[in-house]
Image 1 (spheres, rainbow over the protein chains, first blue to last red):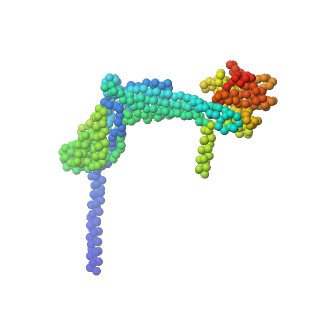
Image 2: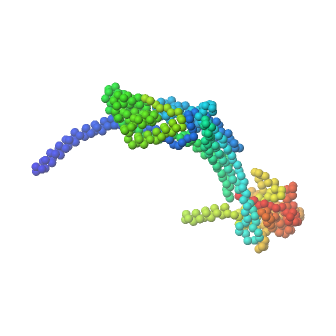
Image 3: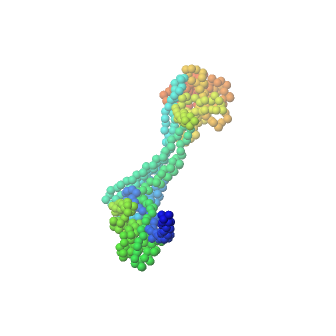
Length: 324
Length: 165
């Protein structure tokens, strides 16, 4: 009997305890939503492949057609890729300034260029007739009779040799050869030349893309850890950080986290500042701030970003590093 | 079922790309003609044999002929040589006409002596020579592009048969 009353008593106590814990726990959960780190999706960049572009100034010389047909706008497409690569730096200060700050610039004079992009192409399309000799195969009366078959083969081809001439006189080539052909089969007409030419032109649309677009991007969720701020003024400013992260206001964020880090020297503030530097393309500054503070994901990401940075340095591209 | 269909398609494919067993077309059933059209090109002047003889040219519409084998002999083949005109209501075949003493394509229903429409196809290297089975005259084409019968083998035109796919 005594044991039973004791059990009831302890049960009542635990219910009381839960009644106290549950509101505290709920409050903690609620606060965690405010205090916990904020994730937002940002673009991160890495090196896709190497390029033959070297230096920071490029001159594009339209290619000469050495063929007899002109079914593809080679210069139009190359000019498009070239213009996109050398377009003026972006007006948006919150974008990655290493990538969008103008790595290369177009120059009007080949003598002042670090690399001259030029070359030639050969566009051809022809309908050729091949003659094949046969004799009858199954007759048993008299001599087998000889006959011929004329087989039409329609061919369209495009060969492009894109040259990259450097100031020391050396030239590197990147060539593309596209062949489309259709042979006449018994009871079937070959594909018309016009269609083959269109297929050639379509295939060229993908050529040289990676020569000019050698940087790839990937959208990642970036985790900004929460920072405990003591200073009243900084605390008030920090309240805006959430909306700035959401709106990708990286310049404001960087300046804020720099102030917090310089005033209070917290590791979380250093990581947040490092993230701002990383997303703005100042990978060396980010690497310095992440030293001893970053997790595996940041380390893996930064390794690729530094590889890109060093490659851009190696090829002599214009590098813009943001400082807050 | 799928396998059987696959075999049938494979067989059709192989047949379509195979070498011709016999240049003769099958016209036993007039409603279901399986015609193998050929261009017969004169090796000397470059004329193409047909009801209207034309010089061989690029992109031009050339006349075509087809052969129908006649089983008259076990050792030698004789052929009817038709003008290939799928749109036409009539059939035209090559005849060594006795009245006109000339060789030309005549409408099949007006042919009186069927023996004069039979041609022996003789092989000369990769060319062929047409000899009439009844009159033994050979087909030749002159510089003007007219068909003329000739007596001697060496005077006959050598025709290159081109199977039109």
